[in-house]
Length: 315
Ligand code: MEV
Image 1: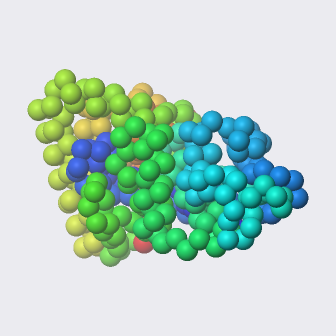
Image 2: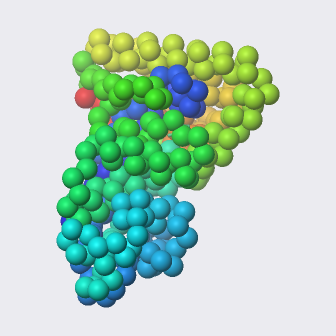
């Protein structure tokens, strides 16, 4: 049984979204996690994830291991007989193959994509009928184990694989671009854990709530105006909004010299706006472009030190 999940980028509102403000995110289908679950003649549940150099039997991993915890959620006990009779320790076991083209710790949602592809592949292998809403809430539980206080935006945009206007604990709202627009994604190549930047922002917020609440409010306004611009077919307005959002993220201390350098390089190459995307400190940034300028913005990002670029269309 196979399942695939895309990556994601946040267009506007990262970090503020943890504090109840709206954020916009879109799936990135150029990168993905693929999971295949197969019968195996040998006993046990074997996980093969070459991207993280993992080849192990489930019971040899700690229960809170990022991949083991997902499997244990779907299959609470490895010895539990399943409707298909698999995994009961008596008739051979399972091989779970996980491959991914989503860079790890880069703000592209690799963790949530692994959870979601794994939940879907395992549940269909076990003939468990599981809705998107169930996939989403299971993936959110896993995010909470590994990321401290996640807003839930990553698991939501990846589960539904649609652009989302997301407010924590509110019903999911998707949006459509009245006019397609192009985004260039640039990877600093510097791994950065979202959990750490989210934790740092929380410490700063605790010390100066007035300042941080007002930054979050400004970001909320940007996200609201951005959604309206996208839905009304005025994506050219997004550039300035990205620049404003990036300045506010700098004030929150989640940018880095490498991210700032790529953001500046994109603007110098003609992008009307650019910002970091995701947790920050490293990982990815995004720039607004159009079909004509996307390639030259991507080249400028590479010259400024990006390790990789992706051109994606929000349609
Ligand atoms: C991570 O993709 C986005 C953050 O806002 C964290 C979260 O929403 O959980 C930084």
